[in-house]
Every structure is written in C-alpha cells, then in structure tokens.
Image 1: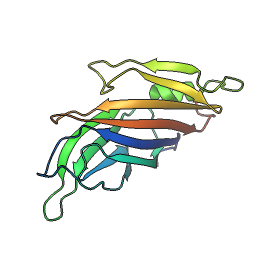
Image 2: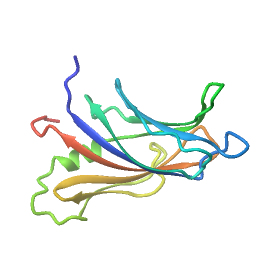
Image 3: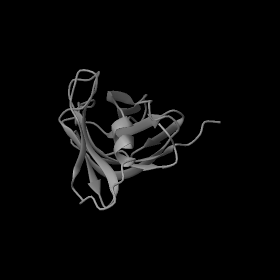
Length: 164
C-alpha cells in the first residue's frame, strides 16, 4: 500500500482553442491522473473553448511522478476521441507549500516555473501564496493534437511531516 503524501486540489478553469472533433465543435471533458488516482470533469457540449471551473482532488503517493492530463471529445455511439494530452510536475508546488508561509502576504510569488521543451507549460507559471497556502496558476499546451490549451489552478494540501 502506497503512503499518501497529500492531496492535489485542481481547479480545471477552462480550455482555450481546443481541436474540433465533430462538425459542430467538440464535447470536451478532462481526465487527470497520477498513480492509481483518477478524476474527470463534466462534459461541455459543443465547445472548443469550454469553461469548467470545476474543483477536483487527486491523492498523491509520489510527488516525483508527473500528473497526466487528457482531453477527450465525448461521443455517444463510438469511442471518445482524444483531443490532446499534457503532463505537469507538482514538485515545485510541493516545495513551495513546505515553506513557512505564515505572515507572507497573499499574492507573493514563491516560485516560477518557466516553459521549456521538457514540460507542457505554455507560459510562465507562478506559484504564489494565498491565505497561507501555495497556489499555482498553470496553462498547459496540449500535445498530440492540432491546438489547444487548458488552464488550471493547483493547490497542494500536504502532510507537512513528510521529508523530501
């Protein structure tokens, strides 16, 4: 049995310029997974720029393992079509969450994750303090598809006794 290190709260904010999989657009939903933990959003009908604003929570047993994000087009009679995928590391967020954030003003940038060819980050991602917690706003560029980005907001709810 793997030891639970903490919970990753993920707000799936929205999709931007997602790929068309049907003539009238797509019916996208997002699946997030890490280890054996998997969650998914609701389906947004006929939209390539859906607004979800849904809060999901993943149980994390190893913060060195990247979180996988997949976007699918919901189909009624056939297998759902892939609309792209991305991965992101939670290590920087976990490290920021372990800092003593007491007395640090909300909005203070704790860490910055730069886009690189090794990650799916579309633009500079800041990890900031918000009411004593570390929060990361993240825009991911989808791979294995023509176009599309997904906006997320992450928050680590960890077990502070865990040693890296």
